[in-house]
Amino acid sequence: MAAYHRRNTYRLPTHDYSDSRYAYFITLQTKIKAVEAQSSIDPARPFISCRPLGTQADRSLHFYREQGKWLIFAYSLMPNHLHLLVSPLGGANLSNILGSYESYTTRLAWEHGVVGPLWQRSFYDHILRSEQAAINVVNYILNNPVRARLVKRWEDWPWCGAPDPL
Figure 1: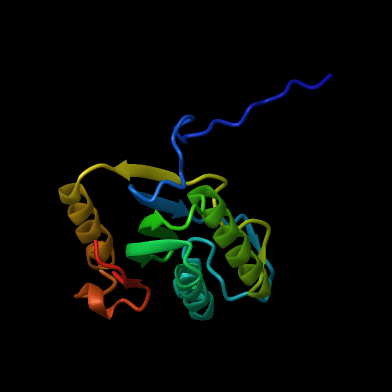
Figure 2: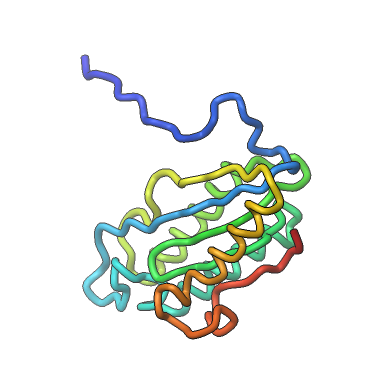
């Protein structure tokens, strides 16, 4: 009989991830292992090597916002990762929303030649407990493309913004 390996989880076991009183700083990291030979995707930088994929991934974030699933206080889709500061709405569970987002964007990536998963299996989250912490995270997220020397001003990065007020 094979040994059962329990996957580590970084979620707090007793926390309700549908609680809209909290803001969550989320980081999703890509982890592409293979692409089709004719694909233009660079596995280390999928969103800027295939700008249509980056644009589709950006639009998908807004889709969940428009569906009333979450507020997006700040986001930045980088060449190989995504930073979000969000709060779930209407009882929507944050893990479920992110799972749907990852699944949908992975299917989009397959259309561009990615073979297998687009994202790492889990995501990093940090629950913010103060307004000042949220302000600091918003600044961190928005300035991520500037720190990466992709643009001089965050407003010039096409997949970055703060659509909802804190």
